[in-house]
Length: 266
Image 1 (tube, rainbow, N blue to C red):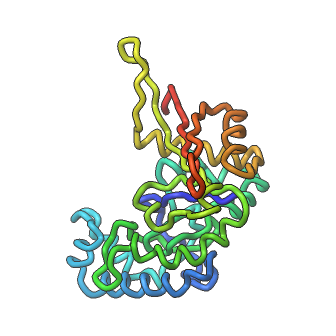
Image 2 (image 1 turned 45 degrees about the horizontal axis):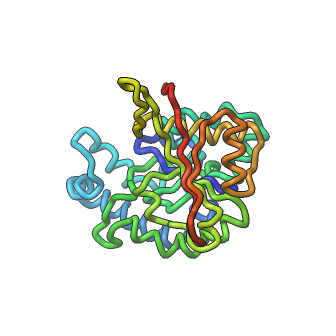
C-alpha cells in the first residue's frame, strides 16, 4: 500500500542536527529535479527578499520564511513526519504510534512537496516554505514542473498494491496515476452529514476533511491492515467503523472515488 499525503503549510522548526543530505532522501530518481528546485529557491531567497516573498505568496508577517529558505543547505534536518504539522498530521500523530505501526508508516507514506517532489516520513529534511502552487521565475509552475519526474518514479514506487490518494488538488496535479496503477487507486473525500429541516445535507469542511483523513491513515496503520486494492480498502474501512460510499469506475484506467461520511466532526 502506498499512501499519498499533502504537506502542511506551516511546519515545525528545523532541527539542531546534521543538515540535509539530498542523497539520503527516498525516491532517488527525483534527485536532479530536487536539486534544481532547491538551487533556484535558495538563490531567489538569498538575493531579493521582496521578490522572494512575492513569488512565494508570503505576507509581511511571514517575511522570516524567506531567510529560512535561504539557509536550507545548512539548516538542521528532522524526519519529515516531525516537520509537517497541521490538522492532518495532528490526527495522524505519528509520534504516538507503536513500533510496528511506525515501520508501516515508513514503508507506505509519501508526502508531496513543492520543493522535494515527494518524501517519506522518515526522510530528514529542514523546515521550508514552498508550496506546489508556487511559480518560480526559472522553472515555472511547480505543479507542472514535477509531472515529468514524478511520472518516471511513482509507478515503480506504487508497486502492485493499493494507492490511497489523500492529496489536495494542488498536489494531485503533480502526479495522476494512469493505466493499471489508476485502477488500484482510491481517492477519498470526507463529507459532513447534517440533518437540516428534516433533510440530510452534506458538505465538505476543510478542517474536518483533513482531520478525518489523518484518522483514516492512523486506523489502517495501527490495525496493521494492508488492503490489496480499492474494494478491500472499502471493506477494511467499514470494519474499522467508517461510513464509506464507493463510486466504482465505469471503465478501465480509472480509479475509485470514496466518500467517507461523518456526522460528528471534531
